[in-house]
Image (cartoon, rainbow, N blue to C red; front, side, top):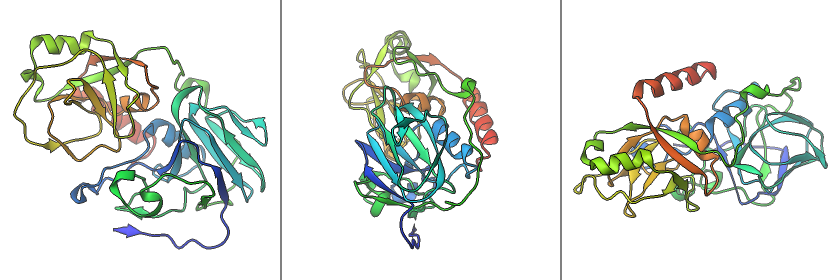
Length: 318
């Protein structure tokens, strides 16, 4: 199910510095579960989708996910890229560019993303999407799955990059301010919780505690899960079989505290599950830095379904 590309000619750009963790991502590997593969995909899918939209790309075209910034890219061609996501002070040859917009480049120019002031992940899209290998119809990188090349590792210094439509001509574009998610590092995130079938097996006290507590994002959070620090939840089912997981499953693990599974989640899990969250809420969690306060609020599955249907319709996701 591996589909390598037949790349030829010089790269369109070279990574001078990849930063702490930069990977290729798209909408995720939706058909790899039977092979035990995580879905992967952009952590903040709203920012990723807007990056592609700004360039008239297909919604699932491969882009770069730059974690925490510290990224430097040197261009070999005249082209246009789009930058969205975390607030990294971005410059092109030393001139600040801003984000949530397209950036026109010339050969020899250098794009620098400083370390992010707020947020965790920025997205850099290229015309037509990155020209890179795919597995199970996805270019998403998941390190632990052991797939070859960029499917299984972050970018390295000196990494050559090519994209599929370098000559595409587009006007300069910038997302209107009212569509840009607010960057408020001190505000508590409200995460909708849709109770699952194991919810009634938690004690009344623990169910109340889930909604009453102010949780905080733990520094051990990563692309697999956002781990939360707060009061211990000691009830719930004791004897469990492993059951399938989806993005947004909220599970209580061995330390008796909840975590929210993200894009690199495993395919099954055997710990007690409180339920799940609206997939759109994962975008905000993907940008939450360690120490960010989080509160769970009750939600209904129909609201989550309608929100996802609106997103898929707007971005023409099929």
